[in-house]
Amino acid sequence: MKRWLSLLAAAALCAGTLSACSAEGKVGQFKTGGGGVQISAQLYEQEYYSADGKTLLGKYSYEVPVMTGTADDTSSADAVAAFNDGTAAWLEEERNTWDATMEDAEGYYSAYGSSVWTGGHWVREVRYTANQMDRLLCIEYQHYIFTGGAHGYTYYSSQMFALQSGRYVEIKEMTDDPEGYTRVVAEDILRQIDENDVAVQYGY
Image 1: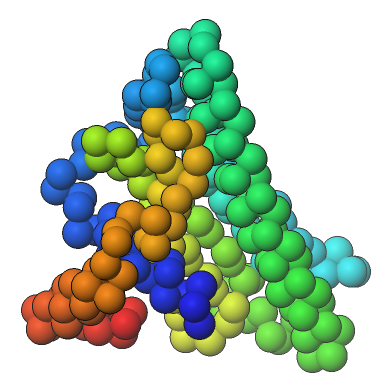
Image 2: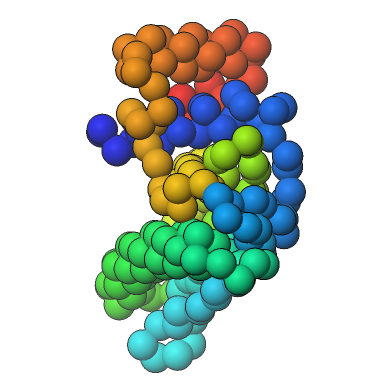
């Protein structure tokens, strides 16, 4: 629960400050403490078939941000390594989770046959948007999951990376008034719900 609340707060922070960010989309140039770096997208995809090879049970498609340095200096190199190591760890966790999900899918297939997949194979998709504030790079991930039923669902998570210090940061490091910050986030969530956006209401 604590991790989920942290992700929610981070997403709210990124969304709330979006107007102040330079929205670079999939590729962007960003400044670090001692030089510049670039963010570009790398795509990882895999399909999972039943043991008999007859049925596509599911697949994933992860669009992942990769950082490269545009200046030959230690600060940029350290920032690039820290960012990419963090992204690689996140990607490994995501892929391991989906591997476990597909093991469940294979179990369902073995028990019930291909009729379980008449509505389509299971899907896991992740896309991202990169936004930069003064000294903070925010990566917002959009997750889509379909594991049978009438429809899939979408949710969001985010990561924040301090460009000058070259490390990932959390909400608690960005304020000396955690309770006040939590109150502001809660008020913004309520404001969004009050705007009668059904998707937002369901999301919260």
